Image 1 (cartoon, rainbow, N blue to C red):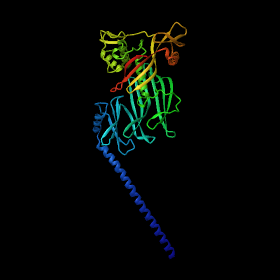
Image 2 (tube, rainbow, N blue to C red):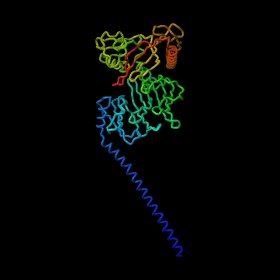
Image 3 (cartoon, rainbow, N blue to C red):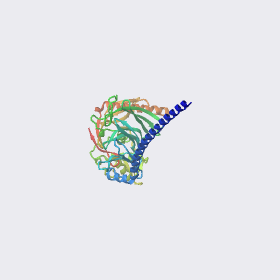
Image 4 (spheres, one colour):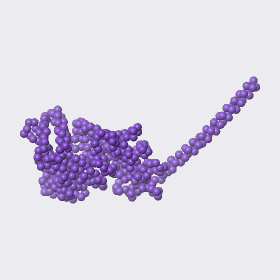
Length: 472
């Protein structure tokens, strides 16, 4: 019995010793963990201290001192302290919203002297940013911000992918997420997105295009989906050789001179204004907008007011302001009672209005090439005229060159409509023929007159304006 008690006593001592050692190890472990936690908390405290010491007014002062884009409005200014790169220091990311499509995006990094240096200064209206979940690509932390741009009848959401490396702000890719534009009875919608595939390190992007009635509800046409695959070249996402569709950029285009989808949309919208279907003469050739035909200048400015304001009568001040928007700050002409045969002066009301015209010929265009050089776009277009040959059965839509010489024609089965079904058939056929005409002009461009449009972007407003038109 004593032996059993003695044995039990030994076992108890050994067990107690093991438990004691375990508790000591656990205590040491918890102390080590506590030290790590304290260190992390200390880092966070330091980070929070920096954030607490920094004020909104101080960041705004840096913006005013270093930004090229001056403004006096900072009511919606926001900033955050975030680690955007591979070092341990925090960067300052900020945004300033100035209007529906106006805004600025800034990033400050500390230079070698420990002073804030502006490394990103973009005219982006930031509608959304998420800097807490970067995408890791090639060892780089890539972030996204969403920019809202647009103008008259245009609203575009664009995704910008970017990163910071060695104190430099680098744009990796941008693309349209959503684009809405209205023109006359059409509502154009584009919906896009992207996805990075970590399995093969490729960026997949797609953009679908739709045409609706002006109400944005009745779908008239699905224009298809464009898919582009990009690979990361160590600096930026570039189009992969696996793409089966031809590139739209000219050979040798640098990333800074590469057209974005937003720019393509803006350019098309602007040229559409110039080649307004209500206008029945060619766009004049000029090197200085103030030397251009006043018939064309004031007609286009008036058309702009009709389409954007919905009014058919306007003051001289309204017309001149519209001209400034379309033609830029260098435009200096003043409208008079006899300035244009296409814009009528109403003596009793001291107002102007468009002169009504019977349109049986419509000038149109097709873009051949677009070359971007910083804030300037040189666009080669081909002009042609659409008309109707009414004496034939069926009626034909005729295509002429700028010398009014008939080049080709397309028969029309549905020329008029008396009910909704016939109207739908007429619209569908009209769209089909229009596409055939574009295709014909593209393949037979040498039979038509080419022009070169020089369009510039105002650095202050971001608006496009035409600087010159040249014959080719």
